[in-house]
Length: 365
Image 1 (cartoon, one colour):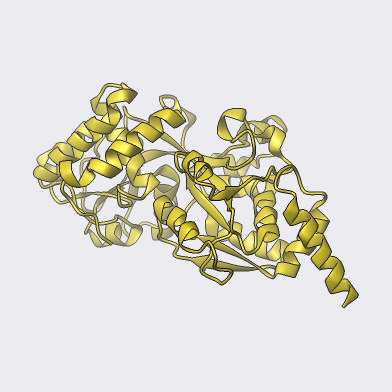
Image 2: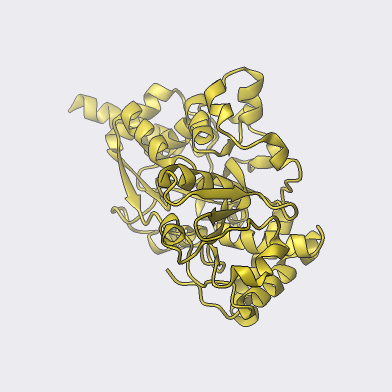
């Protein structure tokens, strides 16, 4: 009983610390174990190496991880927090992993609580909220994931996808009204069409997909590894790390080519945040500590993602050579553009609200 009371006291003390680093990882781990579990949402195991990352966390700390709706989009994650404000049960997410533009809006709505991990100082200032309400974790670029059994000529750029040979072939990897990956896909196509003018990218992206849909090249379903392999969506516009993971998973059946377009190379940063209503706040903080540790960050690299602490790890010589060797050539990323929060917010507003009216393609499961 005394031990339980001590752990309870530690839990309350740490939970009360809404910002700054944990008093110690041992105390945080003890408080997290007293809570018993962590609830995550929208973390498919083939996304950025999440399957191994989750297993690594469970093995290290012995906590149960309750996984909600792996195929949800960023917007769905925000709605899950809103819908479960008073729910302490298994349907209430403790943490979220969302596109960068969703961080400031979630903070403004009071849906997140601040927390600064112990490696906070090694995270670039541009990739985190100064008060610790959200923190960038990893990034990739939009690519074309192509089924080589069906598509014989590889598209090299966004304009190529308009060609008649790609009829009924092109899909987004999410619903552009809710999924950050899909919104960024529309934005990237628009940035290419607008010749790099970010102010026009949202509108141009909608026009692009309206034309792609009218041409009969756009397939209005959520593209996945299964639909790619089956031939229902032979070309999927997908984050490079997801496409590369699919290539490994499919093991040549069918063979997959991952093409980074020549223009409109958009880098998307995903961030971590803790729900303001998290039933397991200490488990949530321990999860973030793990993700931003050297071990967690290298876990992203193994899943073909570029971790936010990449520069710090590289400078310290902590990245295994065999992990680096599996990543795409560095020159593929030389033209990568990192949209500002303002640019992302503006594009998100245009794309999510005008998709139905301009494109008219209801993207379903």
